[in-house]
Length: 218
Image (tube, helix red, strand yellow):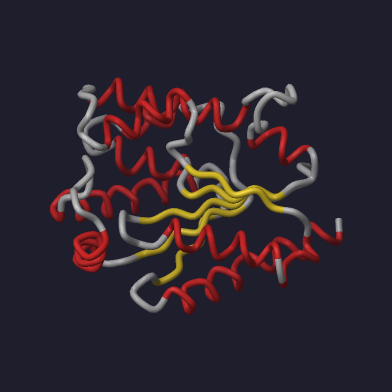
């Protein structure tokens, strides 16, 4: 058993994954400190493969769908298994082994939902076969129209997958991906995202606390 807990926050663009990850990190540094230390991460990462993925998402690098999926898989492998050699922040696997909890703003579920718009979902899962299974994935579910309004209010440009029609298709792929991963033992919980951030946060805490308490008792 891992010493730390691996928690992933997922959802459509505009669903608030980044906001909720930051709120959870603050909670672990305050009220939740009794459950242990926590590191917050995100995908794409700031590493070499993640930086290239961000360029592609921002229309500054052109890749076909398969190359994009492989790039995200490479970034995920780096995110998880980056060496604990004292010269860089270690990967998720090593942090969990140290007993630190890890929060990730997006992970495998995002790849299955987004990359499967143009590729077989099973193939996307196959190229991510070494991705470790999170202890808990929270999917923030919002209507694509809400996603669209939030992005228009907060961003000056659209990333590769942020069009309204695309987000509606992605939501459908999320549903398929959730069913696929649940069938492989992933613990994925759904919370409604069409409400204030503070209410979404409390719903996430309700899902998270039993896991933290069980781990504390082990």
